Image 1 (cartoon, rainbow, N blue to C red):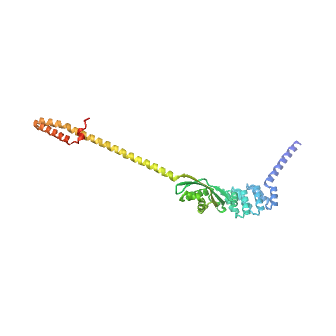
Image 2: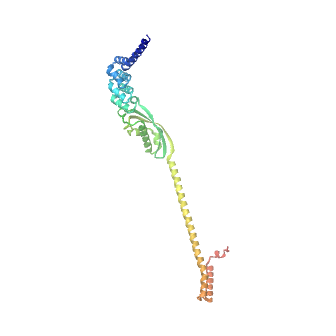
Image 3: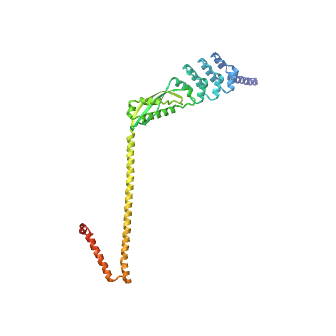
Length: 330
């Protein structure tokens, strides 16, 4: 009796396990829901096949019901393929429904391509219906009169479904708008022109077709704020003047150093010449003594030489100016 009871328990557990396994692979409830929602599926070929293909039947069937109720026809095999490719089936179906209600021409193939490209296809459809406003960071530019202006722009964009795959994003739009603002302000003769007509910036930038090659269409560019910055022209002139002054000082110092070096060289040369003269004068007594010893110079000749020297010194003294004569020695 106890053995029979144990066997019954095992049989009951086996039956429960088989029932769980049966309803796992054959979701009867899901089949009934799909049938009464207008989605025609076959139990073994479709629902059981999804289990075997590692595709959650609930995900596929729920989205097929959503599409069918919205009046769209989607292929089950394509939904499975998109899921297996790593796509977001729910977002694709919701995007198709939203696009259909907004009369936006979005095909299933394009929606899946956008989704697999890493973009939020549902958000893109919403942005096509309700444009998005993105604000640029503060852009600083200098007009021709040297005054700096700081501007902030608000760019209204709408998603371009046809260019979502491969199109540039918001960062490119902001960079191009910032470049256009700098170019427009820089080409203005005066900062007052920009302050008086800030729409000049938006019109000029908008006319450049900055949305080319991007995933968006620019609807408008509005200048939210324009402030006056620094007087860059005056700052540059001041810096240039300081630089010129430093250059002039450096050149003056260079000339002074060269003059000092030349003076020192001339002093040294005079000293060398004086040394030579002193050396030559020192040779005179030796030469006279040698002439006496050799008999080439007599006593009378020596006294004549001394008289000539005295006469020369007297003539030099007479030729000097009066103030130099009266000047006390020492």
